[in-house]
Image (cartoon, rainbow, N blue to C red):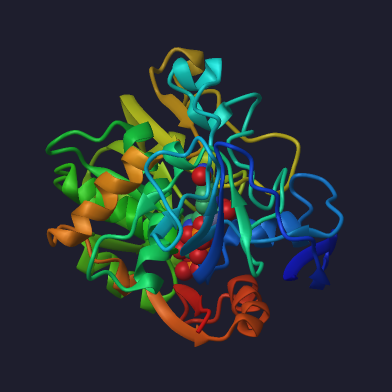
Length: 351
Ligand code: NDP
Ligand code: ZN
């Protein structure tokens, strides 16, 4: 079968792969809609997790179940499903301890396009199908539903990591699709003032629609100065969904003592992140830094997609480019790499 793969660091292409084997707890899924991710870009072009050879890319998709293992109880061929980017082993000790994303090792719940072939393929494998799949709710477009694989749960996990409460003043640094979902999640959690940091007008417009009260352009001056001046004091919570290793220093500087940072940004380069000693209260400032991979799981997918069913969240605003045909994956991935001004997220329908 045909697959679009990372050939080695800095190089991608079409390859032939064997049809996957379905174990007793597993499912095989034929994709209906797929989306490339900024994380695929970090993995291929920054070599952020080391080299990979002929590894199928892609971890955001919805599809039709074509085969299930003998022990799968709740899914059958023909079901249309959301497949999360993170597919933990739910019987692992880490998952039992509440850290499903680290099942069987740090970040090892992240299997697609990391430790096993991803979804950019004619068919792909899903481990622990009952724990990891969720039915696409009726009435949701498959392209919009792909946003539940990664963008929604990751942005919302940033909100959980930053521990946003009613009335908090929140800054979201980075408003690509992940940051935009952090904006939406923080607004739903009751943020009072909500700063959104980015530069592309397409993203800023949608950030306001998702609930941002103030747009900060990082290209127009230091974001620390801009936010402290506008807010008059440090903020309660910061969510990092963009920027680089220096962004941590800025996040610490705009955060109040007792505040918290939720990082979901994938740091693709460099040895260390920067924590400014004095602004961190010389080590005693109670400025918490929580960085995390989203947990994955069927329950989370069902709950988040129900927010769309009941009108709390509209993921269609994220999808600025819709392609048709599997061969368009390459173009869509290159768009994610080049980030043209009007891009938030492309999806590819396999019809
Ligand atoms: P995008 O590249 O689309 O968005 C990045 C955002 O950061 C943009 O708004 C960009 O602004 C902004 N930005 C860039 N540089 C700076 C800077 N120096 N200071 C402030 N803001 C800046 O990325 P995505 O939304 O697709 O993904 C965000 C991150 O989340 C990526 O690192 C991705 O790999 C990671 N990720 C993490 C996951 C997890 O589970 N933890 C899962 C999925 C993704 P603009 O472009 O407007 O100039
Ligand atoms: Zn992703």
